[in-house]
Image (cartoon, rainbow, N blue to C red; front, top):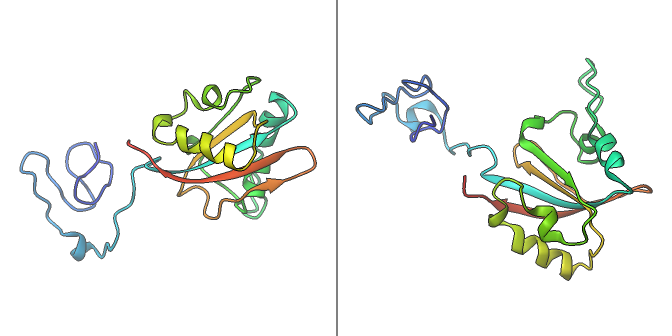
Length: 165
């Protein structure tokens, strides 16, 4: 479960602040722990991108992981394009659709009802009519999200969205 005091994950008593769900009290306040801002629950704040790839294999290749032990080589093309070396793939989603319907492309992604309409409006306003790929990532995984216009693909950063987790 998630501690209501410090937002840490715990099973019986929070090891971070001492919160006990039976008494609904914590041994330490956030101030005593030196915590100024609570962390968010994964995917509570998420980045969204629309993209155009030649085919589904190209999208899969783009996200194909190749981890090196040097701490400087990006784990895949997405990480490289976003200025990251590593991100936790458990908090990144992507999909490909041959349908020209953005709602169909977005449906099925985590918390899609929280951002779907805004993403579709963004696409219309920016004349992105041919997107066939969708990417969603927790804000803690990608620090400086950006759009990318490469020779073989295009990725449009849509924005950051609050999700009802």
